[in-house]
Amino acid sequence: MSDMLVKLYNIPTDFSFLADMEKIGVIVRKPIGPEKHAIVDWVREHFSDPWASEMDISMSGFPPTSWIATYKKELIGFSCFDSTCLGLFGPMGVHPDHRKKGIGKALLMACLVEMKLKGYAYCIIGSVGPTDFYVKTCGATIIEDSEPSVWYDMLRRKKRN
Image 1: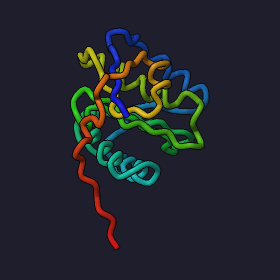
Image 2: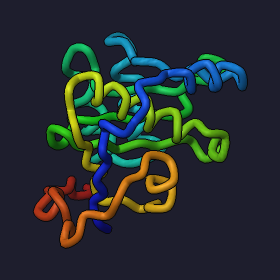
Image 3: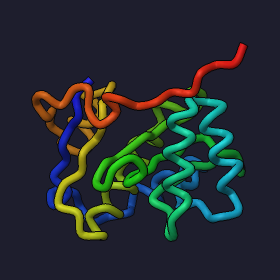
Image 4: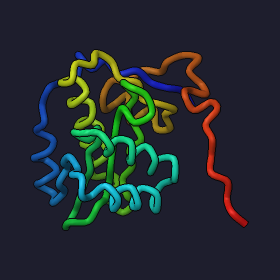
């Protein structure tokens, strides 16, 4: 899977999508320190160990370089940036029961607007699966010859017998 490039200077500096999410009962917000272990555990349970590690890194700085989505005080999604490399968005995930409601778009845009406000001109989205989503949502373009990306020699935990 290729990486994609987003021109952050073309992204509107507008957080109105947060109010749109609230209309459907979803709160998209920055996580706070006491939530770190609960969030990291949830990401590990619903997605993967590597994504949990990236979420852990994103919450280890202050302020966190991540956003979460909650519904009825339950975690339903997350996104982060600057957790594998500076300027790299991801990972992002939404629980399957809550997909197709615009939550992924809100989590993505929250990170992109924050990156733009921090002074980034560009964002890399690493090893993208749903390219059409990123093209449509933020105008991302494929970076040619970007496979296998930064994860080319990533260590993985071996399963115990």
